Amino acid sequence: MVALDGPSGTGKTTVARKLAARLSAGYLDTGAMYRAITVAVLRAGVDPADAAAVAELARGAELEIGTSPVRPHLLLGGRDVATDIRGADVTSAVSAVSSVPEVRELLVAEQRRIIEDVIATKGGIVVEGRDIGTVVTPDAPLKVYLTASASIRAARRNAQDSAAGRESTVDAALQSVERRDHLDSTRATSPLRAAEDAVPVDTSELKIDQVIIALSELANQRGLLTGCTAEVAQ
Ligand code: DC
Image (tube, rainbow, N blue to C red; front, side):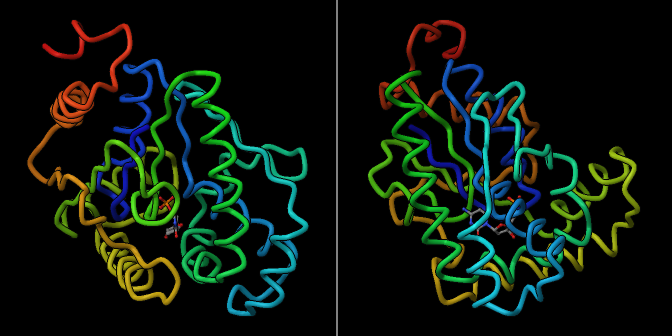
């Protein structure tokens, strides 16, 4: 099991999916779960700042998340929300929703259940989020904390949004990245921070493939590779 934490725009999702595919492991995007609950909140017309109403909605939400690194699906009430969760409305409301303690409790329990299941069936999983190494699985054999400068992360986010046809500018992306960093790292419950035993990896000057090689080596050192050692170790 690999726990991959860090703020947005560090390349976490791409790195986690590629690493999982290389290790023949499963993949879990915990941010997508908080985003899906946020979609439910916005669709119901609930104020994301109304913690009691958000918690009640989260308790009733029917969430199903796939763990394939190639094509991870995400269903809310049986309907595909994989595209909706990336909308700007969701991105700006997700920090409020994910700061509600009951929402975290529900999703962390679900994440632990999925992780256990996937480890039993596939032998391993790469999990990305903000609190994986600190709260969800503090016993993970490999914890990595990805970082990158705010300006680089904003440029990456802007490029991703533009490529996906979403309206975006570098300035707006920078504001959004800084706002979310602040909210995510100052919230009372499970704030974003590196676990003491996490390996920090600054991706500012690295290409994705270089990050994958570095993490594959770390996984190899910890005996987490099964069947693909030769390819990965090079
Ligand atoms: O990784 P992402 O941008 O899709 O995450 C969306 C939000 O969800 C992010 O602003 C913080 C929150 N989050 C969290 O609180 N805990 C996690 N394990 C994952 C995401």
